[in-house]
Image 1 (tube, rainbow, N blue to C red):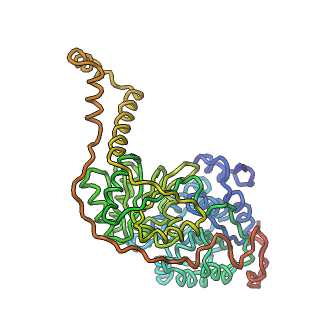
Image 2: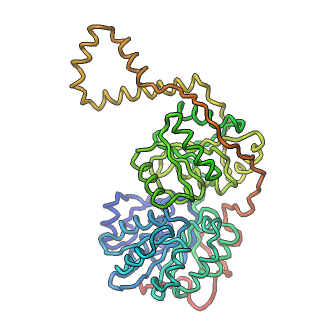
Image 3: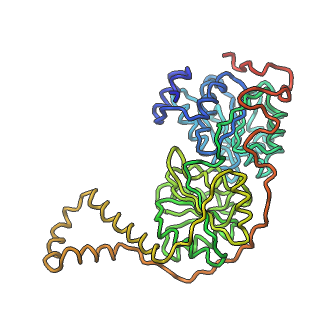
Amino acid sequence: MISFNDFGLTEPVIRALNNMGFEEATPIQEKAIPVGLQGRDLIGQAHTGTGKTAAFGIPMVELLRVDQGQIQGVVLTPTRELAVQVAEELNKIGQFKGIRALPIYGGQDISRQIRALKNRPQIIVGTPGRFMDHMRRKTIRVNQVNMVVLDEADEMLNMGFIEDIETILKDIPKERQTLLFSATMPGPVQTLAQRFMINPEVIRIESRQVTVPMIEQSYIEVEEKQKFDVLCRLFDTQSPARSIVFGRTKRRVDELFEALNKRGYSAEGIHGDMSQSRRDQVMRQFKDGTIEILVATDVAARGLDISGVSHIYNFDIPQDPEGYVHRIGRTGRAGQTGTAITLVTPREIRHLRTIENATRGKIDRKPIPTIKEAIEGQQRLAVEKLMNAVEKGDIEHYKGLAEDLLDETDSVTLIAAALKVLTKEIDQTPVKLTEEQPLRIKQSKNFSTGYRGFARGGSNKKGFQRGGRMGGKSRFGK
């Protein structure tokens, strides 16, 4: 593995990385950072959670100038949540050099953003729609921009942002460095790269599986009307500390998190119809552990970077392989293991096979957990709570009370009673969800693990040379 000291970075950037706890570069960072530092265009195939923000953020902070009071770097992201997260990481990387990033996104008061822009950040991280709003108002000027990053390009395509991106790129000076990151390479993303990039270095981290190998993937075949009870049994048997449940529609999300709360689970929902302040509140609660279960639609969860998510539950099967990859990528991050379980109706089995074939990952069939297994799972959790309390100590004030109780009853009966009190009873409160129609089989035409028409392994094809400047030459005079 390569250390960040091996990249020839300046002292303020190294100090920031040390402060952030960075030690060894991930594979995408190892290959992308040297190319970025040379000022060359780059295409990186990388999923969320592989360290790609630092892969483009380190060269960006290293190459931009503090003394130039204009916007020099632009990062476009598909969602407001990702914009905020990327800006936070860039600010950490640039903290000692004095490079500042500002997130710009829809749903936030634009006048507040205009005031923040007067502080002259060097980098803007934004969603395409709101970025264009500022360009039209001339509150963001791009004439001095020399570095552009397109983050999660396939997601921006799925959300209909490609035309906005083209409009933005046409206005930014051609003498710039462009870095594009995408988990998959559908045709329109390739076309975008061919139009706006110069001899890009193509980096793909070789992997036999498209999905993350640290994730245990399985499915349970279940009738639609049984799904909710099965989900509850999964929670009771597995007792995840932090999990995300994916639903297909906003209505489904609302009904699911309300039903989970009825049965005594700590759950909240997030989808596109919620106000930004409400979404921010839910995400804070989820991150600090106030709530244990986040129920989300695909759109709301895109770009979320939350550590410690141990389980992903696909209450509804995703529309396509890309959706599946992005959903389960919320767990198994940073070298941790994760679990992803998909609930599939009998009529959706063929759709599941399509996803399995496209992602080249084995999705094992699992039986429906029994009530007995659910009870045993809750008993195990009660034992863990008791033993954790023993390990933590700080129970001196209770020892006298315990001795008094032991005078009245034997120790086995007393511990059994304590475990009974700690064990959550299996709640079977009746719940009715609106049934969703099974998905029709949908072949994903765009899903690709390679680059049809793209060079592999770093060599370049002639189609990328737009002319006018050398592909390998740095635009920063370094």
